[in-house]
Image 1 (cartoon, rainbow, N blue to C red):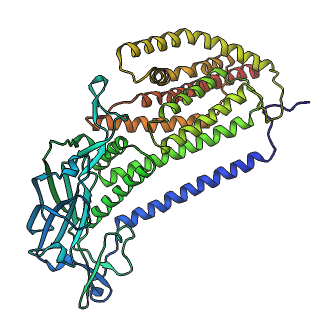
Image 2 (image 1 turned 90 degrees about the horizontal axis):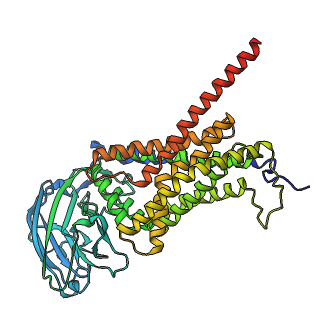
Amino acid sequence: MFPSCCSKPANSGGKRSSMAKLVLGVFLVYMAHTAWLLYGFLNTKSCDEGRREEGCITSYLSARPRLQLSVFTCLVPDNSQLNLALRIDPFDPHSTFERKVNVPLPEETRANGSLYAVVYVHKASVSPLEDNREVHHAALLTTHISPVTEGHRETKKRSKLKHPVSHWRPRLSVTMMSEDFTFTKGGLPSDMRRFIRISQEGRRIFYLPLLLIDELSFRMRDLMEINRSTTHLPLTVSYEGISLRKFRFWVHLQDVVYSLRQFGFSEEYIDEIKGTLVGSNLYLLVLTALITTLQLICEFLALKNDISSWRKKKSMAGMSRKSVLWRSLGILVIFLHLLGETSLLVLVPVGLAACVEVWKVLKVFRINLPWRRPCVNKLDEEERRTLEFDTQASTYLSYLIYPLCISGAIFSLAYLRQKSYFSWMLNSLVTGVYAFGFLSTAPQLFINHKLRSVSHLQGAVLMYRGMNTLISDLCSCASTFSSSEAFLSSHQLSCFRDELFFFIYLYQRRRFASKVRTHGKKVKTQ
């Protein structure tokens, strides 16, 4: 006799539960470790006043030396062929200023080449190449990206098909830690060690100025395309003296942006993230990190409970086949749409969710795979009733969805610019999934209504998903009201599906439970 399609090993559930608890525990330990590092980041230990002469590293700026700031341009940042662009003498590390200069462009830069800026802080009236206590930092003044083309709806888009050309960065933001902070010899922060240079004069040990070029201040919309006829371009050099805490904060943010590039994020996405990071303070970013952590925990718990409940199902009574199928097709379409437009950090969770949804389709339709043992596909009475209600609801729903999707696709083809017919078809499918995805839950709600029960659904999964999307929507609304450039994307609109489904599920659960209690009281009275 063939086994049931829903049968499973006896001890597999306990092992999976233990593994899920282990993964969740590791994640919580990691977040606690991150919080501890953040506490150390905000509270750097200073050297005691009584030990300043023996075990402390003081600041070079505490002696008030006469300094000069020089900005050079060069093709290669190797201290050769430097061209002076700006000189500030005397230079006050505690000041704030802004200077505008015209920078001549070499022939190599105009021929789609690069140009660097090298910022030196050194002794006044002394060449930086002859000062053994100088500090310098190099940064690219050019960026190679695809040229801007005009797209539909009067929005600027960068064509990925064109060869990248050199663009000019019109602003150079220089920062330096001007706070007179004294470190302990064994207490140098790990994130600061690559910036700190130690020097000694007699018994006094001091660190040279901590110089940093802000890579987050410029945006891609400010870049200027360089052509062969361009001989000079404007450059705004700004300077600001900052505290140790802010210096470490900026170092951490620039490391985050570097990590995003390593994960494969495009420059457009990184540019949006930079705008968010620069426009926010430290406490708001910490709050954002906490909210993101809460969302990750909710997503993990929803996925874990979803897989666990579906593996335990021995009957598909009460489950809408069409809702499961449409959810699976929808997330597969979204995955194909994101395949060439985002990073692996986004693709991996979406791909994992798509695999889970495909597995659920195989399970609910009882599809026999070649490498698995055959199983019985016979439906019982409850499953036949469920299939009847599912077909009835899907038929009614098709009268609404199909005309809307077809008319939207025709409108898109007629009035919007498309790259190809495949792109048009994929975008039409994605728009249909985003706009009408919440309608795919209607068959399941109809089945719940007909069966007068929601016991076949996992309330924990719906709760975690609803909470997750509710947090996302609240954050999106907050950013919409606080930002003049914010907009509500179609993906955010599609998230209302989980919230709406969860609230209707709560209503049906309360309604059916109250009817059961009323019926029980009548039976007892009789």
